[in-house]
Length: 91
Image 1 (tube, rainbow, N blue to C red):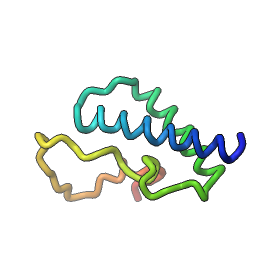
Image 2: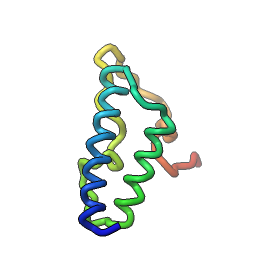
Image 3: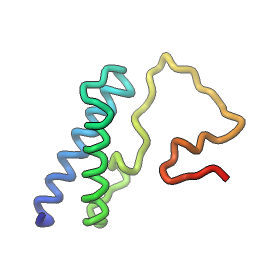
């Protein structure tokens, strides 16, 4: 894939993933399966790895989800929930 094509695909994937994050986290109404979402994220991660200069701080690969629903209460955990971080194994 040429860089111009990769840039367009990255932009499209980011837009699509932001849409699905909003549907899932804000509306609590997902429209795709978790596995389909994961495929989109893996494709985006692969393209950003191949073209690191196209990586931006606003990319879904650099963030976790979207703002949660207002109905959820904030909870402080005594032990950090490291399971939310990829490739983080407990000590």
